[in-house]
Image 1 (cartoon, one colour):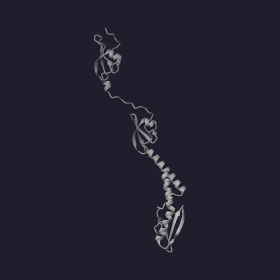
Image 2: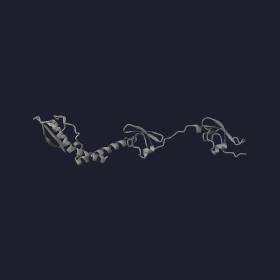
Image 3: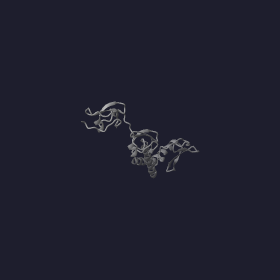
Image 4: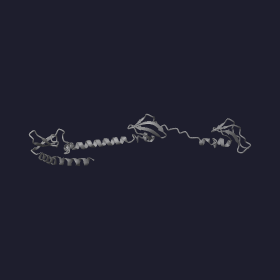
Length: 223
């Protein structure tokens, strides 16, 4: 005779609700049960008590409800350049200060390995280039080879001849000059404009070429 178990109508085992008293005349003893989904079935009471059956099978077929993990991050939070918009599973939809929207893993936000969409790195690169540029300019000024002394300077818009370093005097002669270290050096007065231009070119070779060579060497070392 099978051992009787204390099972009666109304008892619940998982999704099953017992409808009748167990029938011990059959082996294994069984009882009629109704599943949560409405299915009625004759189920082994030993399987019920041992937990080997908890439903008619609908429990396995029902979609699982995913509960997002609480990372301590909520919409509106600001992490670096990111502003959190919403959570999607293990990631967060974030908007960067530059306007780009990306899906960022929660682990990267928490560890602060992600602080922007990449514009932050570009900004830092621009700042580094700017600082390098200032460093080059400072070294050029210290050596007296600032680009302001280059022979490629634009001609003054008020020039009477439209030729850099050559001006027309009231007596009709042409005066040649060159500016070095904000100091104007007189090169001579000529009747012919071509002679004034030649004098200017000779002065450029004398004063500018050596400076431009030094400037190029400084810029090359700073790169």
